[in-house]
Amino acid sequence: MVNKILVPVDGSDHAEKAIEFAANMARQNDAAIHLLHIIKVSSIPEGIEEFIRSESIKDSPVSVYFRTIGNGIISAAEDKARKAGIKNFVSSVLEGDPAETIIDYARENEFDIIVIGSRGMGSVKGLLLGSVSSKVCHASDRTCVTVK
Image (tube, rainbow, N blue to C red; front, side):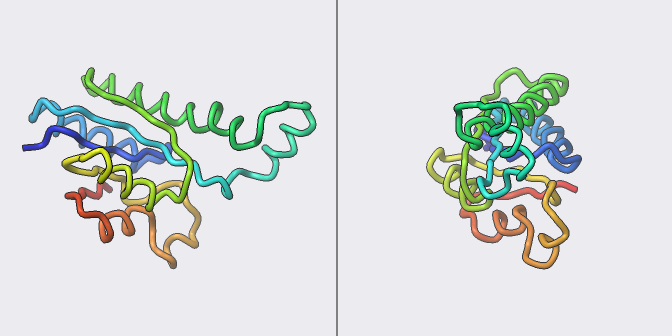
């Protein structure tokens, strides 16, 4: 039986489809959904750092990114979950390597299943080096569903 579903989100179309898929599964199993966005610190665009400095913002670029971009992605995912009829969900924004953080988080919080979009917002380089979803599905000890 599926009681806890982890859905990593990055704002991509495939992540949105993963939310829909997880919502259907959650309704069928009366399960809870946890939406998770991972911020890879090295991926903060240079332009954002320049903007933060030029505006004399005291917070670190990571902190600003957490509040703006990361929380925006989570907020959109929450809206999608609500529209799909899900009321029992939690959301988090964490920092780290996306694949490793998802795998560790799923294990530490004893999720039954990970539902993840097959392609996220990553670059073409991800096609050559392996996507986050591929890494998660191969390295996790949890059941994984990849949604296209």
